[in-house]
Image 1 (cartoon, rainbow over the protein chains, first blue to last red):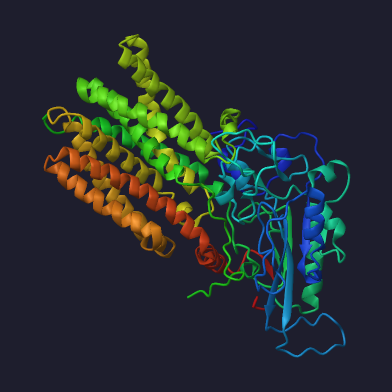
Image 2: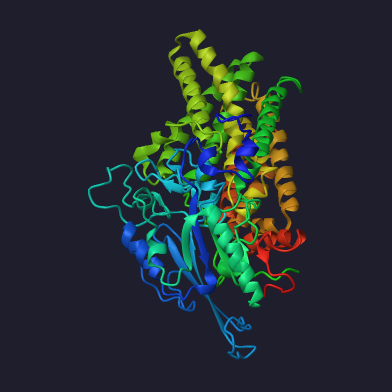
Length: 308
Length: 301
């Protein structure tokens, strides 16, 4: 099976690629993304606020969770940046020269999570309307005038990022149809597509006071991340690792990747995600076989046994 | 035993947003697709009564499928956006096209049959429904498998077969409800054979899934799963002893419960992070540590 750009289905759905080029953009700007360096995150949540403000993301309830300083809980339709807080009784890193730390002192991990803008984005691939699309910057964006709220992208995302908005629709915008009153469409980070088109950096990166959120061409960010990891290594930081930086991983590397100080699952990330569509080719073949056997079986029920 | 860590026990993947219409559609779409195949096959073998009944059942099941799907949408008035593209990477898009063609054909044929008009057109429509019936009955297995929900994605080998078997069982069983004992023999054999296949595939899938499949033992998925097995087993036994009406009804109910069991299992599988984290962590360990780049000589914890 070959697609319109000449790739086979499995080539198109897995492995390292230039996502904008593979989506049909001829001459396009470099792939843009985020490198979120959690080792310098101070948990100020300026990214959460800036994102909400710029993108008009509505308030979706205020709740005391008891999860350290995190009352946001996770990404969703109304949260496109989420700062995680993890308290651990583990040794601190020896990052500051000349300061003695107790070995079992509390360390407080903070990390600003966001849509990964995967090289192979399951949400985009399974979207039945074409509402989700690849931008010229290689990012993944929902067209809200197209989305019909089928919800397929929600369980397709290996990271649990995209979600349907259940808040009431803006009055007067929703035609009366089957009594639906909620917004009903899916929403997620756009990597500030509007700001990128205007030559600006995304609101979260702009607001980040420590440059924990770094925005730029993905190639450059990957080099920067490697340098940073080497530096932390030299300083003997505990558990430092890059997450989703590798183009050979299960999502073909992400446009938004991270430097973490513990295993991914501690931050609520899947430790070794693989885009579900990687197996779609074999799933279609399997289904076609099942469909053929089904037809043969039904016809066969007329061939065996006497007519009663 | 791998220690499973998570962020305050929160789920990693999101639960589906789908509501009751979807598992009901898995049943009606399967029933419609398989009935169209049964109806045209009966025609080829000269069983006119069975053919006509299966045609009507198939058309009715296809006809209720579309409103069920539209009703589940967050923006039902935009249902036609499904057909603004054709997209092989989206099982839902492919399914929307298949349902449009299969349902359009089966309902055209049923109306022409009822009115006694345009026989060549009717036969052509029945043939189209015959060819689009099997994909309609099985693509829903790919639909749920092509997600990050562990119990669905890992069940990808069996799910199209399981849904296909359930579809065939319900089509045979539904025909037994309306066709007299003299003519429903093939439908009865189909319901028994497919019903037993459905049971065997359920067992196979749950065994092979191992720990990921344990959601089928608990909660709503477990309840529906047990009901599906009991109803299908009892129904096939009754059909085998030629108790057509009760047997047919029980096999249909069993096929419906099987869809609900699979549907509910997906929610339970998404809700508990261990089903997502543990297999991935074990895979990463097998490949020599996480794919994330870790400092050499230090454990991550």
